[in-house]
Image (cartoon, rainbow, N blue to C red; front, top):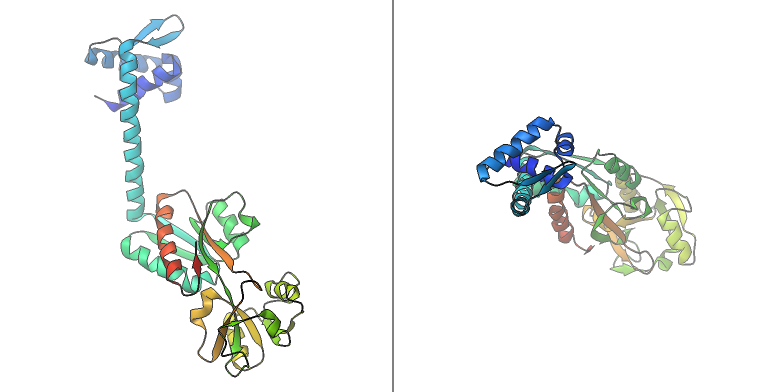
Length: 295
């Protein structure tokens, strides 16, 4: 049985007239009538009662409609699944991430995904959460790895991990042997930070701990911060995602969660099969990171 005729039949049955079905399917009315006539002839039954205003299903037509809908729905599902396979066999996947996640979280996921789907064209770019969220909304990204926040309202997020905060100390520092420290124990230190704004995460946390940090050096670049710490010029915050990339002459101590809550890292995934398939790879990568609490 020709599935195209089943599509015509379902349209006529749903809309109640040949004219409406013709308009919906962009056929001529005569073409619709001809398709239904051929279908009825082939089945040996009348599918519609023709009336002055439209048509009505016969008992035989109602029986066929149930089967036609099942067949057409299954075919539609098959097309979607085949499209998904085709996308994974040669589509593209555009990933956006904040810079820290690009250091340890995203690369292992990309490597594993490329091993399983070598024909997918992959690209990775970095940026701030607000910028990445805007690009995903605009259809310029398929996956965004970002920090959870109000800027993501309206988007479906998948929690990957809770990223704890560490403090980087010179090896000769009085607290360098400690695994965990309180912010209050660092009240007299010189700090290296990305800014001196009151919105700065460090400054806000220190104020809640009862002191205002002395920011002696304002540095954005992570490698430069490490160099200053190693030289004994101050201490700085280190996200857990960067813990494995710390140089050997710098010591790390974890800050208590009560002093500085771990930041939630999430993935926002576009509604494309290739993007949805990438999520488990990100989840596996997050689970493999030491010290991070996964969702």
